[in-house]
Length: 235
Image (cartoon, rainbow, N blue to C red; front, side, top):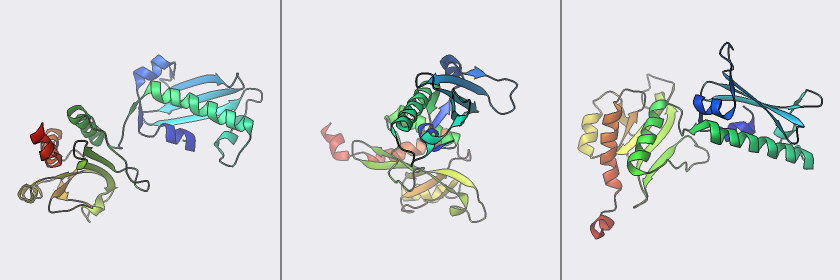
């Protein structure tokens, strides 16, 4: 993806039904491209061609209608001028409409991390906050009542948890009683908290090692630690 489409489709997952409803054509016999879309933009001066591969991969390009050649100036940061600006804006707006109409929002890379996010939203109404510009893949869940964190999803290399392993993984950090942490560390999928206080936090590997229901039960306990007891008493 180019820098513009990469930003627009970040945390987006394409929905087959929505793609077809929007006007994408399905290419059943294509080796790579699954869905294809062609639209005239900017008073028919350009063809916007969008190809979607699977749920996450997208390729978008502009073709000059008069020359039938690909146009790329709108992708260059140093390309200035009124016309280039108009093309860039038309390109961005067209892709934003596709993202809005054809995608579902995802915040993380691996399925279980997104499932847990959906369950947190359903149960508590909270969405992850991405607080660090240099670590945009780390999402924090906080209790709006107290502003305290009760869960953090991080993407790291597994070697940071287990020196004998490697590969990118996502983990969930939650807060628990120290006695429960001690017991859970004997169970597969649980590790000393990465980058947090190991006495009161624990890391859960989000690769299916720990059942989703068990994760949510433990997360509920973590949420209790984030509750403002004074406000609860007043209520």
